[in-house]
Length: 352
DNA sequence: AATGCGGGGTC
DNA sequence: GACCCAGCATT
Image (tube, rainbow, N blue to C red; front, side, top):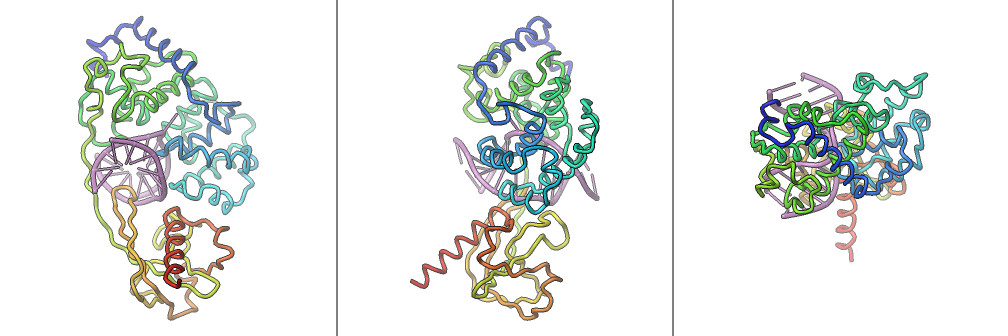
């Protein structure tokens, strides 16, 4: 960290102070109007940070608005049924976030007073170093520096740090102390948000807007004109996994599978049934091939017409007949809801 | 330290 | 198609 600061304009304390002021002034004038910034509260901050985890602002906006109406505060969330919570999260992904938010709200609701200490927040379900720093700085003005993907991008460019990082998480961990050193003692929440806002709206991954950057004079890469080459990450190897799924319908219902065999990542969330050799399935004609990526795995999911041979074993395979009229009520993973609609469309167009 | 976990924007 | 986004939990 120290050798990163040497021979850099931000090594100088008065320059560092000028940098903070420039960034905050820019933020005061240019910050986006976001629903968790107008009439802010601890609750809104927590919800927004959970939703924004690995998820873009534009994706979060409609979910956040609906969520705040349905669950306006910690107690209402604490008392809600997990079913309803998952439904509010449908399509956002990383569903454990919703379950953790449920648990967290139950813990918060029983607290006499809410601790401001970052370690308390880190101990809560679903909260790690980033959200703990974000919440305690924004809501309690604690001096805790966030270091997310935006901050990593800005920092490596400021210092021309061409080190090849194993992955984003590693870079965040490694650069967090540097983020902390640059941080002011006051307005820590605004400063954290300003740093990320700069990354999100000016210091883009590709084609960064260096000419209009408010802190260009503190940025090595911005002045050299090679910001786009930073940060440097190792390549990840992708794997492919092929899966068979079945389209099993009756006149008024579709057979769906709740959760996923072997783990609970999709607990409470429905998808088309997985075809297994030992299952009660009869595989029919091919319908279509769908692709989606989860982490580094590219899933190629082939969907076939199917039927079931042993109707008494539905529970064993977590299978449920879902009436067509109820299909909007349950929580289906984003891609599967889309695929189901597409398949219905194609079936109907075949009949005409 | 490495892996699993969603879905979508953007080039 | 590749990369990555206001990361965290588990192993």
